[in-house]
Image (tube, rainbow, N blue to C red; front, side, top):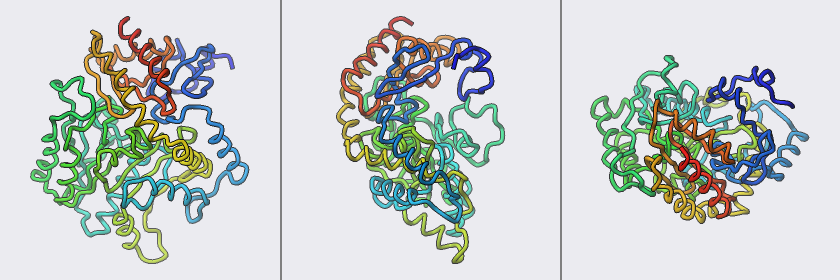
Amino acid sequence: MQFTANSLEHHWMPFTANRAFKKEPRIIVGGEGVYFTDHHGNRVIDGSSALFCSPLGHGRKEIAEAVYNQLLQNDYASPFGSATPGTFELAQKVVQIAPEGMSHVFFVNSGSESIDTALKIVMAFHRANGQAQRTRFVSRERAYHGVNIGGLSLSGIVKNRETFSGVIPNVVCMRHTWDAEQVFTRGQPEGGRELAEDLQRFCETYGGTTIAAVFIEPIAGSTGVLVPPIGYLERIREICDEHGILLVFDEVITGFGRTGSAFASQTFAVKPDLMTMAKAITNGAQPMGAVAVVEEVYQAITEAAPENTIEFFHGYTFSGHPAACAAAIAVQDIYRRERSFDQAADLSEYFLDGLFDLEDLDAVRDIRGFGLLGAVELEATGAPGTRGGAAQIDLFTRGMHVKFTGDTGIVAPPFISQRSHIDEMMGILRAMLEAI
């Protein structure tokens, strides 16, 4: 296909400056390993694992073959009242690597859907326990929980919600954990545990028995990699236990090895009651998300309903799609066979060394990082996001893809990266930062 202004016009692109893009398109036509190929034939190193989705790199034939074979055998069947084998196999594989006690998995098609599903599970749980008065939800400033109305209501990123007034009520936000006095902190900041007391204040202000759940990203990803202070997540868990509040970890970005463990909840040794996931569950090869829950949550909802009736009136036409399950099963097998989470852990220190080596540059306001997830925040010039948007395009032109939110570039290398790839990424980043 020849890409011209007219041929690009009909696609309304997501989270994109459409008019600017169509004047100067950046179109990916291929991918193999840690590299993309653009429509000019240029090689572009993938510095953000696409959108944190592809830690195994691109062009994995075993995933493609699994999807192909599944589509030939059974391309689709209704997930309502019937099922396909892959859903059970995949659920078992996820439970095997999930935090201990998380026993059931509900499949959806994206991270956004996983958040809205978790909201409904929380509501159903409290209703089943006779506590339907728990209608309040707690999120955080700078939080990102997808773009469906439920997740948007939990959002603490103003640009994501200022246009859309139809959000759900009774959501309150704790303060975010970024501290200007702790810039260039590698790993978990030592200060900031006290910020968890915002939750205790909400319990005292609104009544702990009115709060249904706390939604939290173990590492706030899309807002620019805000790593939790030491003791912060532990204190959130304590307060939730004291007041009967469910704790939901949004692991859409951190899930499947990004922090060196299967899930960040294991890395930080804090277990949630529900856990959302997506992205790396299929290595990005098929759309899929999921919600894992502890046994108590599943049993409360299913046992509250009469026998032979639907217990949870929720689901999607493509929940547990056979092709998505086939991709996810193949990916889970690769993770285990190649010890991918150990790969991420082993590469982390070298990656963070390279990232924090950029600290000396004038354009850099802050650097944060944990595991194979890091952020370079630029000194703002002009309107917020202006410098970051230009930097993202500049990087692509130089041969590197990086996800930017506002003025912050989020770097998340594929687990299969070699040290030479990290060196290449850091070299391109440094050249861009020195030039702006």
